Amino acid sequence: MFPIARSTVLRAARTQIYTARSLTSPTSSALARLLSTLAVLEQRDGKLQGSCTSAIAAAQKLGGPVTAFLAGSGVKGTSAAEAAKIKGVDKVIAVENEAYEKGLPENYAPMLLENIKKGEFTHIIAPHSAFGKSLLPRVAALLDVQQISDITGIESEDTFVRPIYAGNAILTVQSSDNVKVITVRGTAFQGVELEGGSAEIVDGVDTNAPAQTEWVSEELTKSERPDLATASRVVSGGRGLKSKEEFDRVMLPLADSLGAAIGASRAAVDSGFADNSLQVGQTGKNVAPQLYLCAGISGAIQHLAGMKDSKVIAAINKDPEAPIFQVADVGLVGDLFEKVPELTEKLKSA
Image 1 (cartoon, helix red, strand yellow):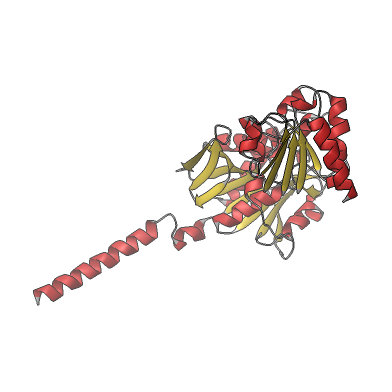
Image 2 (cartoon, rainbow, N blue to C red):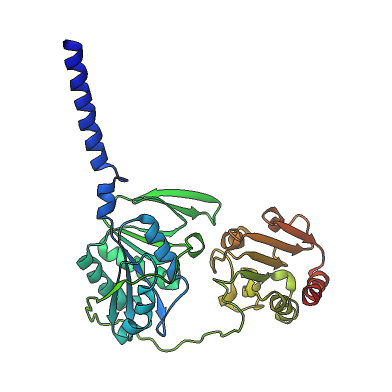
């Protein structure tokens, strides 16, 4: 009788231990139901910016309900309605006020904080864009938590993956903060369906916080070419092009023949060959097109950090030992002033 009674007690003990573990496990269904993510979206002139989808994709990967947040002039009838159609968004919080139209973080952050507290959100996510990088650090400071920046992967509700040292090392970060404040790399989170949703749009809390800064003006570079951050094809030039005149003469026809966006290395931008908005790299834009074709770029680690996620990388350089060839899928050693025009002509004829 004793062995039977002893085994029964052990089974009961194991059952109790398993139940306790399941209730306290970070990945348990009980905790998953408590997750609630606020995706802070950027809008301009009533239209959602392309980087917003990465924040929603990351929020969906976390699990739990996803709420989108927007603020600005007349957003309920424009960008908020657009966000409500995104599949997987459960609710959209909109704050209509001209004061938030330009996303100035000095008055946007206190207003966002009150909406976070009211909704009792566990995760706050924004794209790792100029908007997110200026806003969320202030929000994290107001919440007295540490921000986790530029993540490229989600392992669990409290564990995230992000690159460090210009992408030469990958860091896994676990946060014990009650509220996780996160910016996400746009190239790492994609695949959001823009249609099929029917989220409810509700009014958010407007604190009418006084602005410490004033929006004076902006100068936007307009181009008929695809946007660099979202283009499926990118053509980039580097310092090897020697001057702005040569950059325009050699690279622009190539981009036009491919229907590609124009990019540039930091060296080319610093030398005045291209506008700062075209810089690709650690201190520029991160891109992950289907094709990344570069000429006259040696391949410094800062540049590689911004484009190495491209599906196909093609490089033209006269130096066979250039670091760019270590990551390139296709490489051509030669004088770019000869090879690029030749390639352009063949593309046009094809």
